[in-house]
View 1 (cartoon, rainbow, N blue to C red):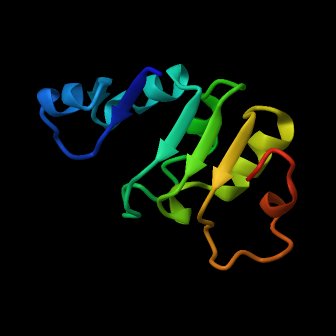
View 2 (cartoon, one colour):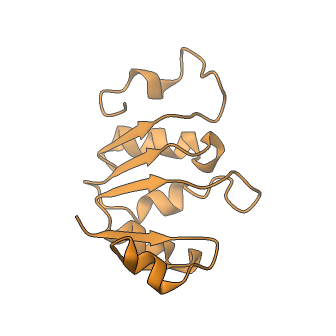
Length: 117
């Protein structure tokens, strides 16, 4: 598997290379990462800068065959935009360990979609 990453903190190239990461950039490379990735896994704290980092615009840059995995914080992903992307086939699927509202409302569509785990 080819692993690529973006990080909000500066990390020495040698560190990423030692971990087998093909390339790592700052957030200015997020669009490139989204366009190239089959799986996007989120591992970032929720801050004012990362709230809804994944939104309608960024989801539109992902491959329609891609999967989004959020094991970080629910507020990083705009759930309304994610639901739309999943319902329209703009995104193949999602794996969610967190939601914008915890615990999620039982009527949340994400809990009832076949392409969401």
